[in-house]
Image (cartoon, rainbow, N blue to C red; front, side, top):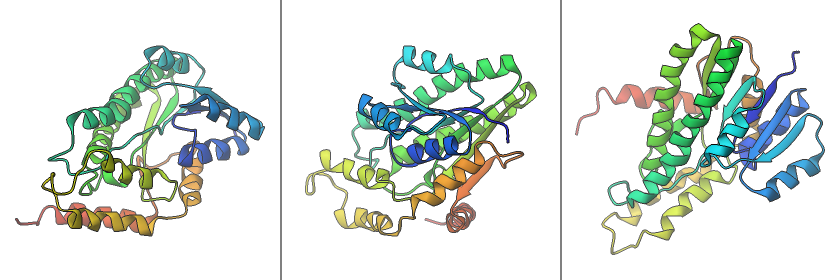
Length: 259
């Protein structure tokens, strides 16, 4: 197996951290880009050969340039934030926050890395999207929309960069119990006020029950570890299989749904 230089953002916890460790243990040189200094220390303490960590603020142009300036065979865009709540009432500054991290900063980093890859005539960019990037879920509108945007950028970028030898693929995990989804759902508590906001709590509760059926994150970690260096991967990669079936059915139903 050829050892690759792989950079992954949002690698301080959850899917990103697990994937960084898995890729390093598979023999790759992995740069784990994390948000906090404490996460750098935690990763370094693991003493996994081939794994190193750096604090990278995706909102900082200097930090993005520092990351992009390193030799990267595979970039995994995994970093993301989320805010939940009814989109008709959600404060706009929270929607902008989600897009600033998930879309604009991710795209800005990707543009820099893509330029270096084009100069070398090779490279791979992986966008970690989400099931909600293909199948929006009520009360997760800002996050869903940000992942929809990534899906569009990835689709266009795949066609544009292919002539230059650079591959672009997407990864759409379902609800895995990494803690991200639980923290995501709790964000609405900072602003949503029952009796003041018109949205009914009982309606939102129907989405909240999805948290009860989350999958073991090791399944998603193993899938992304295999996907990042895979030969001839699919452009779209949904895990686990039941989620792919649900997405396909939801998209088909959209053509016949009546109001």
